[in-house]
Length: 551
Image (cartoon, rainbow, N blue to C red; front, side, top):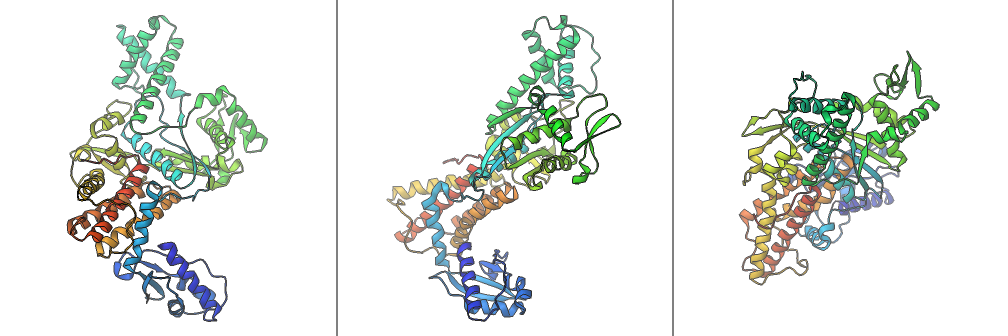
């Protein structure tokens, strides 16, 4: 409908110019917004105000000219009003919204999908937690954002790859190995001074026992060799657990990429040589520095220390170069909010590669405040007093967890109440939406028992009640919401739209009977609720949340 009105508006502008009512000029494309107040119409445009300077005419006069130049396409526009300093408000005939119903029912699962991305190769890298401990609830939010965003991009015509970057190299892995080795010594009856900065959760003790079973002579090894064995064993075991937890959360990756492979293949050394040759890396005080400041970073960054050891930034440079070398046109990294200081240096590396700044995006996901009955639960990976993602999913289910993680913008704080997530009430957002789907399935079954089955969209535009038009407008808005979610990289927009649609359905269902005595009207209303069900299913599918037929 929005495209239809824009087409009518364009024709009116062209007609006014041809008739000499508006001067010929380089006018911008018209755009429409949906007024927040229903009385202001279905769509509004400020085109007259935007073009006042080019037309050398008062906005209100331009608006009146356009108003008089509009030629209605059959049965679309009821009226056009000029408002304020030059707004044009378009009122659509209620009957015209029936075309939305036809489109939803005909396209089905494809309704909302588009070719916005035109096949652009996009990589979404998310979670990428160090294999030093189980995933916690904060990782779950990042997983929900990343996976749903990948689904949004795929639904809008992008060629998407999901990737997990395994941080299996560096100090944290040795710390993991040391932590497991020391716990193994304790299990062997030895007195141990356990460092404060070691990993201290109960899972470390479990891994120590497993390592001793795997390598019976572990405590007789030399310490360095034993720590290396424990590090490798524990990282592999933890990573296997991470994979399983993510699979249970509905997340799968096309690629699991090892940081250590960058060193083993010589990619880090090659990347540093590449940037040295380009003059992007220079030597100072015995260390090698990447000239990131000239690309907007607050200062240049060390990539090789004076002692010859590379920094994490060195492998990150190599990793992002590798991504572009693999043919990705756009890279999206989803990080925790504590990585905000890292964004500009990666931007710098991307631009030093000769890529546009827009080819890299870092989304920072704020951690979750986990509650139980309104009371906060502590989380700390060092102390081990944390709630794992697995525990959350086991308690509330994948659907509730994924949906609730997306009830706020990713950079806004999120309170996640475990008790609320389990409630079967309208206070629980995922239940509120899923119940709409289940209720419509029930309506369809009852209608079938009365011989009412939808074979094709209704021919007559009988849906003119205010609540019906609101539902049709919300259905029509879904493709736009999906494209906005893709453009802005905000998958929570799907969640918001589903909640809006659910609220409109509940309001409609509580006021109007779907299947009544009037057959044609019942047929149209049944078609309407089946279209609502289809959009609910499509949206929940993007979020990887199920659509239960009964609850």
